[in-house]
Image (cartoon, rainbow, N blue to C red; front, side, top):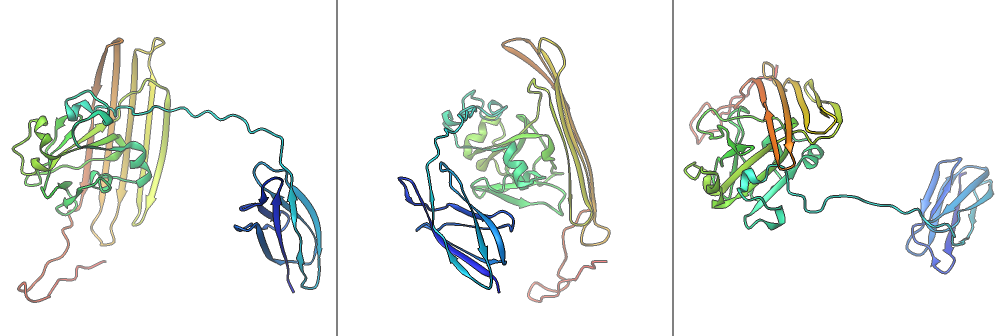
Length: 332
């Protein structure tokens, strides 16, 4: 029969300790105390075992306890406060930093909290944490925005405030985002932030005559050199033979930190749950920055995406609208 251990943990000048750890290191069995400082451990084998009781700010207690023949033992522990002072921890950061290329969207060089317009920003960190691969993926958590249509997964079109197909710009430069035309596709590997300007303020972009202009405008800010030396590579795999290697490398090109270079890119290949449906894409985004003086920065950038995929608009109804006769497309 297995044994068990019950008891209470109290601390000097603190009374009963909630969340103290009671752990048999040799067995890998442990538990935390409840709100009353009590604990219960079961399935303890026969023999001598050392229990460790610990709590932040208190000295840990070690005790050897013998078990045999299905015993339930009761042990209380009293922890003394530890005189050791925790090491100082410093946290550094930039508060209310203006996102890169925000002025290309708002036309006003202000921080996000100073804007008089309704603006949302999707950061590079959020894009990475969500695993977003397309613009539609990245803006799904922006209030008021959603996917309007993908037209067989061959374009990206966004709806905002009831307006379908709102305009999209890249670094403030217009791209062919109108869903009534060829549309466009993007790759998140080269994106620093995605900035969304809601409402009629989109007229600041000079695109007030688009079908969805009243809903707002989306600006895709691409990655450019930050005058640091860094780099990373990654690979992503998924269902239906998805393979996606990526890289992002940047470095300062001279000793005076006046020139810098950055290049990032991705390659992706992916099949589908239906045969004959696949996707292959190649993306690369090199950029060069030159700072001749403290007030001037000249940027040269290329953004190239080659995307080859099988359009897949789903199935069709082979009868009148009142009859359900949807054609079942083959999987293999």
